[in-house]
Length: 511
Image 1 (cartoon, rainbow, N blue to C red):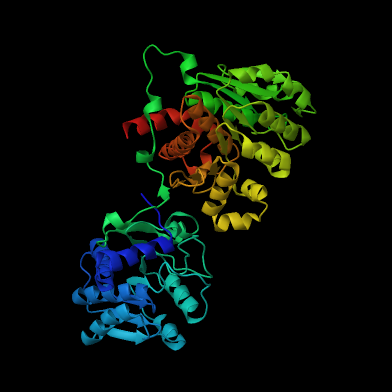
Image 2: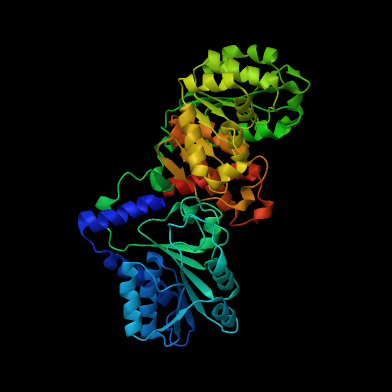
């Protein structure tokens, strides 16, 4: 399913009006009816309900006028609250209809708003601000939103909760906390990313009669099964381990031995034929948790962490690998940076860089330059802080616009970027996929190491880097969601996500 920005939605509306010839009043009528339809479906008989409809001055308010008209036909207790009668021309059409129907219309003031606290509404319709909001909310608007949130009513937001920026999902000062949001054509970014998603409640997408033919060049999508190529999971009866790829993983230290174990276990469990773990000897004390099928290449370390001199002794093995993972649990030091530069200068195999590999990349201009010119496939898997270091910005800037951050990283390094978060973003710098699976039980150290291992395995089995990233993110989250069927979020462990890959792959293949 596509995800739209506010400018894309405005362009779709413009084409509907000027290219197809659908009048704006028709689209507004359809939108308002869709919201009414959803309320009727949820509550059934409305005649005994007390309902308030809060309408702004823009077209979102016009949608609210239409909702109010339909509600007034089946419920005698509908009140409409306006901030100003100076509304858009299209909205005025429907406001005038309400006046002729003698619907109870009130102009909001602080005194009126204060008096509403003594009244009880069962249902509130929020039609104050639509998808075009760009500045922070204040004054009477802010106080009204605060009232709505404290009312105890079931709240329907029209298109998007008032106060949420539809392009960044950020709260503009304050925002309506909706029980349900009814949006049109396709969801917007503010419905999908956090914190906007939290404020939306349940999101319902409705068709308002805009032809699909005018919806073009949309680059952002929600990641679904339809976007995945599961053909690589098929195995021919006469195949052997070499058909499923050789993964090399440079990971671990005496401080973070578990990262290497999680990454390599995940790679093997998700189907690669052979997995080689290159790790300092001092990290081997933790290897009783490692799957026995993993081939360990222990190297001489320096104070428990990877060393350049120890690493180069294994250069000959790199000719065997179909893909290389670099970074999990290595720690950040000059040796790691030297090894990354050595790899980028001397080898041309697909590479997945995570964790301390990304930290070394962010601090080395030489590594950045080499990665940009690296010819083979490459995947970068930063979380928000790592992305901020790479782009040399504040982490708050990443949180405000993660899609922009991910596409910048992908474009700058000509790589696939997997920006990890509550909504993980996968992009090649052009197309963008947002993953909506997963749960807060994944918010534990080690989850990222597991994801890196799955990505490596998918590449080893013949997927392109982009396809591997999409498949891995989906499987990783699906496994965690399956675990949630029997466990609480608090008790889910990254190692259990690895064990759950069997069920996740089964469900994925079945569709």
